[in-house]
Image (tube, rainbow, N blue to C red; front, side, top):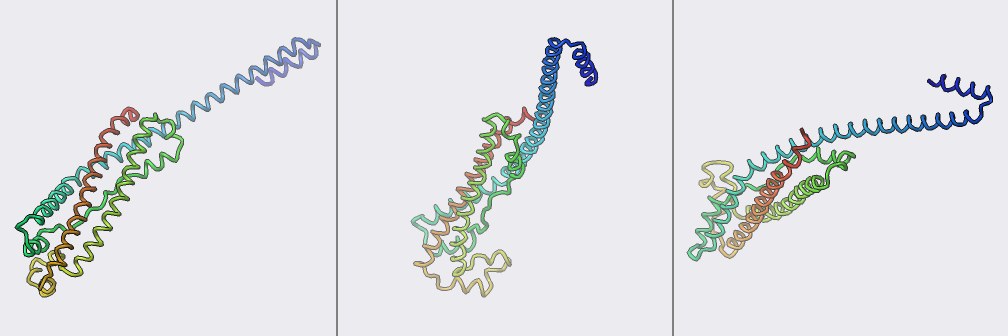
Amino acid sequence: MIKLFRHIRYKLMSENKTGKYFKYAIGEIILVVIGILIALQINNWNEKRKTNIQLKSALKSVYNDMVSDSVIVYQSLPLVHLRDSTIKSLIQRSYATETNLDTLIVMMQNEFPLRWYSSPQYNKNTFTNLKSTGAFDILPNDIKLSLSDYYTTIESYETLNDEVLNQYRIHLDDFVKRYNIIGRFYDSNYNNSYIYKTSWTNVNGADFAPRVAVLFAAYNVLYVYAKEELETNLENIRAILPQLKPFLD
C-alpha cells in the first residue's frame, strides 16, 4: 500500500501536476491520521477490555472474600452473644442487695468466663490489591464508597477491640496474681489443690470486691464492642453483596 501511494506521488510530480499533488498529499495525510485514530481506538478498546476482565476477576475475589467473612462472622456471633449475656447476668447478680463476699468468690471461682475475644481474620488482601490498580477507579461511586466503608469499618473495629482487649488483659493479669481463677483450665480437681486453696484463704473483701467490679466492667465492654463489630460487619456484607452481583455475570 505504501509503495502504491509513493508511485502515485512520483507520477503526479513527473507530470508537473502540482495542484493535484498537494490535494493528494493532503488526502494521504488525512488517511494516515484516520489510521492512527483507528489504531488508538482499537488500543483503547483492548485496554478497556483487559481492565474489565481484571475488574471482574478482582470483584469476584472480593465477593468470595466477603462471603467467607460472613461465614466467619455468623459462626462467631452465637458465642459472642452467649458471653455478652453471661457477663451482664454476672454484673446484675453482683450488684444485688443480697450478694456478699462469699457470693462474689463463688462467681469468680466457678462462673466467670475467662476466655476473651479477638476480631476474626477478615479477608482484606484482594481489596487492597484492587485499590492499587486502575480497575477500582472505573467502578460506580456507590460501590467504591460501600467497599471502602466496609474495609475501613473492619480496620476501625480491629483497632478498637485490640485496645479494649489490652485493657481487659491488664485487669485480668492483675487479678490472677492475687486470686487463682485459672486453675480450672489445668485440672478437673483444681479446687482441691494447694496452689488453688492458698490464693483463696483470708480473702480481703475491701480489695477483692473492687477488683471484681473492674474486671466485670472491662469484660462487659469487650463483648459489647465485639457484638457491635460482628453485627455491623454482617449487616454491611448483606448490603454490599447484591451490589457486586451484577458485575460477576
